[in-house]
Length: 340
Image 1 (tube, rainbow, N blue to C red):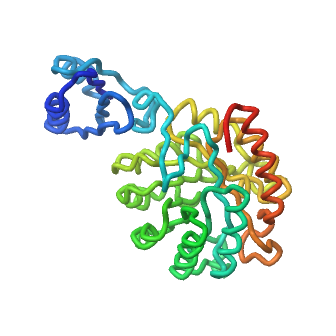
Image 2 (image 1 turned 120 degrees about the horizontal axis):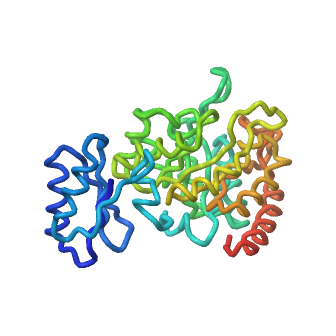
Image 3 (image 1 turned 30 degrees about the vertical axis):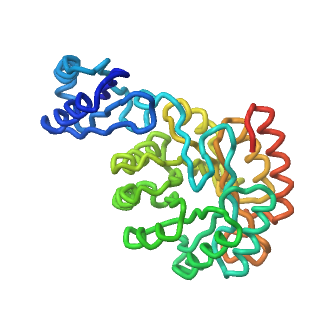
C-alpha cells in the first residue's frame, strides 16, 4: 500500500502519517525521488487492507491511498511512476544516455587492469569493471586476487578517472569491497543470498544485481526489494542470460526481460552480453539488440589478451573489437532516440 500526500502537505502532516504507520506496526518508507511525498507502507497487510485504506484517507494532507498490486513495493511503478536515474560519480544511469561498463572478468595484475582501463576509457566506457573476488564452479580455478585486486582496481580508477564496479560475494567482505568500489555487484550465484542482499542494502552504495541463472524476472525484482527495504534505492537490475535446454551458447539471453522489467519497475536495466552468450563472436549482436530493446546500459568484458586470460577469455572482446562495438552502439542508440 502507498499513501500519496498532497503537494501542499506540510512536514508535520507527513510526520503524523509516518508516525501512525509505525504505531500500528508497519514500516513507512518515503520515496525520495518524486515531486510530492509518497509513503510506502511495508509489512503483511493482507488482513487489514480495507481498514487501512479508510483509516489513512482521513488524515490531513493525504491525497489518496492505493494498493500496490505486485509483491514488490518499492521497486514498483505504482509507487514510483517515473524512471529512476542514478548519479554515480557524476555519471547517470537510467536516463537518455546508455552507460557502458567495461573491463576484464578478473583483475590479474596492476599493469593489466590499468592497460585495459585506459583502452576502454579511450573508446567511451564510463565505468571500469573487474573482479577481485571470483565465484568459480571449480574450487581449483582462479579465485581472484582479493584485496590486492581491489587495490589495483582503485589505482586504475585513479589513473583513468573511471568509477569502479566490482563483485562482493560474502557478507564478511562487504565493508572492504565498499571502501574501494563505486558500485557493488551481486553476482548470479548470490542473487538470492538474502543475508548478503540486506548487508549490501545497508551500505547505501549503488548496486548492480544480476539475475540468477534459473530465476524468474519476479524473483529478480524481489531480490532488489530486499536491498531497497534496507534504505538503498540505487539498485540496477542486470539480465545476464538464463539456463534453458539450449546449449549453443553459455546461457540464453532473455531480451524479453528488458521491456518486462521496464513495465514492472522504475529501476534502470542493463544487460551483460558476455555472460549471456559466453562467446565473444556473439557479444556485439546481443549488445545491439539490448540497446534496441531499451536497456539503460551494458556490462561488457574486455581483455588485453583474451587467449591468456585467467578467467572467461572466450567471452572477452579485445580492445579493438570493443572500439568497433562502441561505434555500432552509437548508431543504434541514435536510431532509438538515445545517446551513448
